[in-house]
Every structure is written in structure tokens, then in C-alpha cells.
Image 1 (cartoon, rainbow, N blue to C red):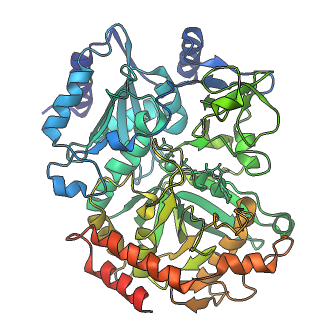
Image 2 (tube, rainbow, N blue to C red):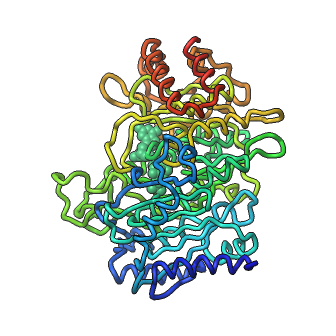
Image 3 (cartoon, rainbow, N blue to C red):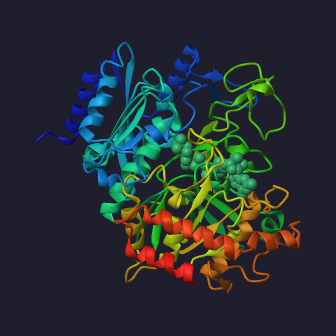
Length: 579
Ligand code: GTP
Ligand code: SPV
Ligand code: MN
């Protein structure tokens, strides 16, 4: 039998035989390696230097204009059995998929360097962490993977010890949207991605491994791989509660994970600790609680809308040593996007800025930064056993109907709330923006198997001895008749989190309604907030007729997962309809 190291070498040799690179570079993850890559990319124009006085170590990358977001229609989950992919995924027969993409990989790295990136998702010594190796011909991907994962020698040592790793093969190819695929082979523990250099399509540790492949592994091993932030809320008594929240792409995870408490809260001694902003792996612990790790080591965050007013912690994080992708630039060469003061002179495509061409920064422009640069970064993010979760929160962009916050009566009801989630689409994926679609648990683009089986997996955590977190649903995005958001959002979202923790600790009674438990009169602390009473009432209003229509739409949606829809979830939906 081949040794564990040989297994890795054999796969790399196979990939090299297919793609025929001029040379192979095994990444060690060192600072010197990163700096050398940056210099090389500055020389060939892949990176553009930003103002090093104001933004030391910051660079701009302009992607191909047709390669700016995830491409869901070209993202496939290739289970041997089509049914296992579910109606929530695009599927292709694995043999056909390999043949299609291998034809594209054939000789695609000729004359170029192949980089071999060993990485670890999660703290390097954590039993909850999992490793992978990405092969790529893109130095931009290597630089991003170095920021986003624990990459290099330590990960390789773990892989050589364990022998198991997710195999990811990536090439930017010709960046032709007609020759682009993001393929997953859960049964083979492998990923093949061709023709895109963009984040979720190309940084294979992120959505491809940590969600699509990991969700399959989590199902067989009894844990959860979720599109969730993890945040610690420390109250003035010094007690910290950890909250995990699933919002669809570009719906506020990064912001909530590093929120700054409103002034009165700060004065009283409240603190917020950031553990993760996008992905959460949760395992049941010996005490019955769910323990979470953030498998990532960095943030690949949405730039537009990020400012000192909305997310001061993100602004401080990205003031140095950050890669910006598809942002605009000011006259003095600082990065710029909509929502910042100042003015752009060059747009995201490198053209002189002209409002007639649309926003200066691409709406899905991003920053890549080490999580350690965040002022609220918590050392517990390195804890091998993870952090215990007190509350799970679901939410989306719903301009109407859904109240600011509601709590599920029990776990089954919580799973229903997650499964029923809807949200307006955003620029994080190509396609129309602002269209309401169901996005169960914010995992529509990321669940690597049949949603019916996934709901059953969620339900299975409710078992003897389990001490499950309370489940909530929030909507920061409800609008008034004037078309404006009713809720101020951002830092003030802590007011809603406080109510959740009060519920978890038995300090708030809540008010029962047919759709769930809402804050009772006076339970949401609004001191220091200029919010008219009428607007608060509108935020919490439950319109029965519209809810009946919503519940019937949810029923139809859930029925689309038959025959794999768990009976318990169907009954739960019936129960709410009849309540
Ligand atoms: P992905 O990285 O795509 O998974 O997105 P995300 O969920 O981390 O989204 P992010 O926090 O980056 O927010 C996306 C956009 O929503 C930004 O433009 C924010 O300014 C805006 N946003 C975040 N939180 C709030 C909020 O509480 N209220 C309002 N109105 N907007 C918000
Ligand atoms: C998302 O789209 O949910 C992101 C960015 O977090 S990406 O890495 O492209 O998936
Ligand atoms: Mn995301």
C-alpha cells in the first residue's frame, strides 16, 4: 500500500500529467512565499498597488468583468445517484462530468506554474478541523487561500499524518463563461473547478469544501456544516453567549459577527467577540450542547456598504495587509466603494469613473483579510473544542411580512423556520437581484445533497440528552410604506440578540403568537434609539391573511422535496397553518 504521503504525491502527479504545467510549487504558507507571490503579481499586473501610506500591504485585483460572482447554474453536485443531489442542486453523472472537465484541464497549465496548497479548515490541532489540498494555476488564489485558511507546512504535516484530505483541482482556464464549471464529487471527496478566479468558485476551501463537500461528510458523521457566522456576546457580568446565524449571501453575516454595541451598551460594559463571519461547523459535545468552530482563518467580505458608520471593526481590519477585488479607486489611490466618503476616479474595471456605467465598485466587490486583524477577533476561535452555541438565528431580506424577530417553540419548529427561509437575491451570485426566493438555512447554493435529507439530518439532532440552542428568525430588512428600512440595523441588532439571550436564560417571557414567540411589551430594550412607536409596532406586526398565503407557499415549496421530505417537518408546517 502506498504511504499517506505517496497518496498525495500520486494525486499531484496525476493532476500534473493532465494539466502539464512547466513547474510545480508546493506552498509552505510562509510570509516570504506570500511576499514573493505579491511581487510577481504586481509585476504582471494581476495586482495593483494601492496607496501604501494610507493602506500598507493593500493591493487591488480586477477580475475579468464576466467573472465577478458565484455561478450557481454552472455549479454541479455529482452524486453517483441523481436523486441524492436533490432538486436543490444541479447534477451531472460523475463519469460524464469528469470527462467534460478533464477535456478542459487537458494541457491547460502549459508554460505555467502549478501551485499545490495544503490547507486546514479549522484550528490546526482541532479534532473538528478537516484538511484539503487545492491545486491551482492562479497565484491570486494562492494568496487568498493563505489569508482564508491555515495553509502550508502545518496543514501538510497533518495531512501526511491523517491520510485523508479533500482533493481540489482548479484552473482559471480562459475565463470564458462558456467554458466554466464548478464540480463536486462528494463520494470521491473531490472538487474540480475550471474557468473562474472568483472567490466561491476558486478558493476551494471555502464554499466547495467547507460547505458542499463538508455537508455530506457532516451528514454521515453526525454534525452540521452551515453558512453561518459565529459571534460571542459578553454581558456586563462577564458572561459570554455564542450565537450562530445563517443569512443568505450579502445579507449581513459579516456585519453581525463584528457589530459595535450601541453607546449605552458600551457604557454598561457589553462586548462583542468575532469568531467567524461565513461558515460554521457544529458538533454535538459530550454535555449535549452544540460546539462550533469557524473553519476559516480570514474574511472574504462584501465591500459596498462597509463604512465607519456601519462596520467600524471591518474598516479597521482592512486598513492594512488586505487584498481588494473589484473595488474602485480614489484620486490618491485609495480603495473606494459605494457607502464610503470621498469620490472614485477609476471604476472597478479600471475605466475613468462615469456614473452612466453604474456603480464605481462592483456590487459584489470584496476584501480578503486575515481574521486576526479584526479588533474584536476572539482567541476562542482557536479553541480546539469550539464554542458552545446558545442560539441559532435564521434570517433574510424580507421587505414585508416577517417580523423583526420571532422565536421557534421547539427544535422542529426551528427547523421549519430555517427550511422556510426566503430572501431577496443579491449580487453575490450572477443573475437577477432583488427577487424573492426560498433559501433554506441560507444553504440553497451550498447544501451538497438533497434538501429533504438535509432537513431530516437537522431534525435528528433532537434526541435524548441533547441540550439544543433556541432557534430564532430575524428580519433586519422590513420596509415601511416610505420604502425605507424600518429597523436601524447594524450595531442596534445587539438589542435583538440581547432579547434572544434573555430568552435562552429564562429572563424574558416572550409573547406566544400563531407563528412563534415574539418579544413581549417592553422586552426589547430600545433606550437611546430614536425609533417611533408606530415603526416598532410595524416591525413586529403579524398580518394573518398574508401569513396564510406565506404558509401555503411554504407548504408548496416543502412538497417539492417529496418523497424525501421528513413527515415530521410536513406535520410541523400543518401545525402552524392550523394554529
Ligand atoms: P456573504 O459574504 O456574501 O456571505 O455576505 P454576508 O452575509 O456576510 O453579508 P454582509 O455582512 O457583508 O452584508 C451585506 C450587505 O448588507 C452590506 O452592504 C451591508 O452594509 C448590508 N447590511 C448588513 N447588516 C445590515 C443591517 O442590519 N441592516 C441593513 N439595512 N443592511 C445591512
Ligand atoms: C457568498 O457568496 O456567500 C460568499 C462569497 O460568502 S463566496 O466565497 O463567493 O461564496
Ligand atoms: Mn457567504
